[in-house]
Image 1 (cartoon, rainbow over the protein chains, first blue to last red):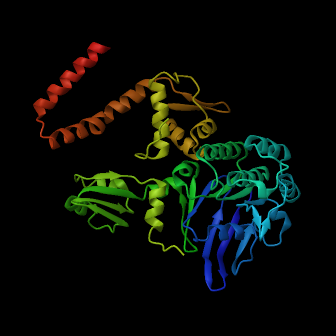
Image 2: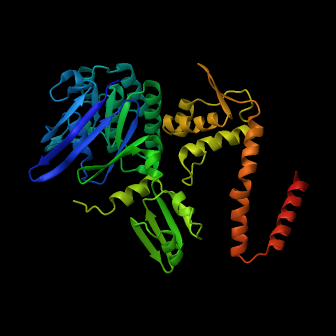
Image 3: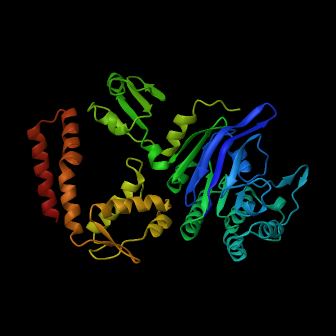
Length: 292
Length: 125
């Protein structure tokens, strides 16, 4: 399977810099989590990867060949994007079956039987129009398109946004079934990190258009810890390190550090040193960002 | 299986398999679930499951039969027991003593409580 290489991607919309100098390589055989706050540039990056928007500067290659206007490369890259029930001022009148037919025409590895199976599993009515679908059904349709594309490199932009808890679990199950069976590469963006973290073996973090982390999930988590206890003891335990976040309540203090837990624990002080979960690391990394 | 956030996910997978071996869910010379089976049933990335399994392979608790899968090594129960006994003092006794001392319990009082608990356990089993 081929590798997608992005070098110094920049994208500006008027004066707004949506992507700033993003350089990364997507290797085959991973499920990447793409994390970032609202407006951090996740959707822009995914659209850039699939050549749905022109880059301001930078180069993008797939298997060594440029992606832009490269029909062959694009037939192997699929972006499952959030669908809208409206088109401009009117309802989206495209039927579910016609939307999926576009997938059949466009993607080289399209699997019609798999698409039908997913439509059935989700209980989608192929004769309904997109405008008639609920938010959850829209998500299911875009998941169906993305999975059935069997594209070696598949991007899913907020696939679970409209889904309830049961359907979200079902989605991750489907994703892992497909991943273990095919070894396709997936990049998934989501805000619901608690559920998704165990599925991602690598994470990409975007902040204000910049890629600030590109790392194995385990390795990223191992770099952080929370230290809590009595204020003065916590200060002693954290001496020499700059906390990313501090919370106090009376004499109780909790500091979030970008330091392995073992380093703090080795000081042998009377504090609780706990690892962080991915959603806590995310808040520590991106918490300072102002919502646009 | 409840996954907590107190240790890395792959370590929890390794511990879960060890617990399974100690409880006789997986007997010696029997096959354990594959990386993909673990991934699908626990909703985790297969790489994480593989990391957990590999940790046990390195310790000789599991071994690979080429083309078939992972199996429980002969003597695995003993190996896990020995390993956990070696870690028992640090993992259980030291925190126990620290908690007792922060409550002002003396060593004698703690020893008496341990004695009592051990006796109760013996009576029930």
